[in-house]
Length: 247
Ligand code: URA
Image 1 (cartoon, rainbow, N blue to C red):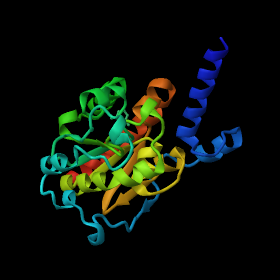
Image 2 (cartoon, protein in one colour):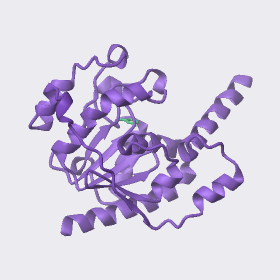
Image 3 (cartoon, helix red, strand yellow):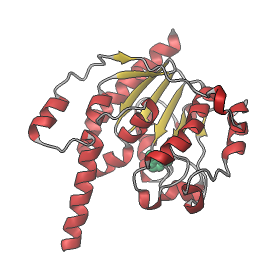
């Protein structure tokens, strides 16, 4: 009984962290965080450089996504190389105009070597379907390519080590728009420390590519009430996607 309560409390705190970041949830913070209009209101430019000349490694020379994946699949740069079953590259259309970025592989992804194949992945497929997209239309990747044991949060060193692979994937796919799934994915890509509330209400840019943010599908499975907000986010994403494709 006590163990059940502890588990519920832990999950509830993790969900609060997903939304509010490191701010402790209180009614006033929540109201403050959520009070902004849901319209896209700020476009922020990031001057981040990818593929620094100083530290060029073999994978930086890859000319295709297949070549990149062949070069990085045996990576042992961080301790997750020892604990993973499968290195999880990206999946989808190498000519996609949209990329979706998650956090890190879970148990199903670690077993199959493909991102978003578990319950969260099925929900992600449904979310895509709701905006007339299929998994095959987009390219899906994660911040980390290897599963953190017990699905714990990625650690800063793991993210720092692995993100250059994601940057190279983005360079090769060259999408017009990116949808980050959850706070960790968005802060990792954008190099920020923002709450999901702030992240969801803005359009960012990463190397001139538009970046929008919504809930992580696993958080939606735990909190079905958040699906309405996700629906608003993905409608904005699809509108911008359509605009970018016609311009
Ligand atoms: N969660 C993620 O962030 N990525 C996956 O690939 C699966 C679950």
